[in-house]
Image (cartoon, rainbow, N blue to C red; front, side, top):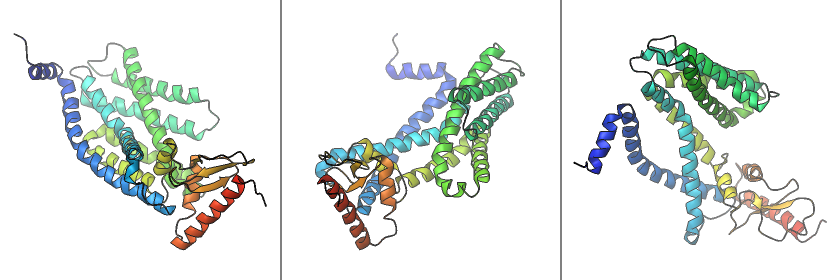
Length: 335
């Protein structure tokens, strides 16, 4: 008798019990992501409008719904990618537990994951501080050390993996994930403590490394509970990056869509000899500035941040001054 599709799915899940929790979690998260995505979209809509407001611009009109859709989708996808990155170790720890040899002690899994992660994390941190190390060594070194450590710790317990080599290779792959996780978060979160780095460089570096190490340890010991801490970090980062005052998400979205945000203005720049005329706003309503070093995304960030704390009239005068200097360059007047 041929099984119906729902019965086939139930049978497959039953035959693969260790993957059932992952499927169940995925289905539940899929339902939750719909209202969350809608709420984030409305929130990001106001953020993009706020960015344009700093430049004296009204929100994009409804006729440019396609541009709005890209900007909102960019913000939502970026937010989800960062959240997935932050929570990656929790998913990795769960996968190790589900795919471990039958009958192995859960303490062995925690110890092997902890040892592998600790060696990988601190060796990666050492390579990050040592700027002259080749990239290949900085990647292969921590992954190899973490793989060997986790593999040998795991094979001390009974029943072990089929061989030490198999265990080491498995943990080398997970060490590579830890390396990507740690180095990515280090780079993305370091910008928030950048003003303090010049004063206390060693303390800030150790504090950031220690904080990420504690979060990784929490993922290994209590994956479910530590997810809340990961979500708090993700919410903090998304709020900061989406802020029109200091974040880079809005300018990056505009820059990626070629709508402005630091892109060269879509005008004839044949008269501009040394530099480029950049558009900080959107292509429909450009905010022109002249930059001798060329147009990059950080142009928008630097210029817009200089408007912070000013009154509307003061901002209007500065924007007019930027536009006049840009038009002088476009008309070939250097006087």
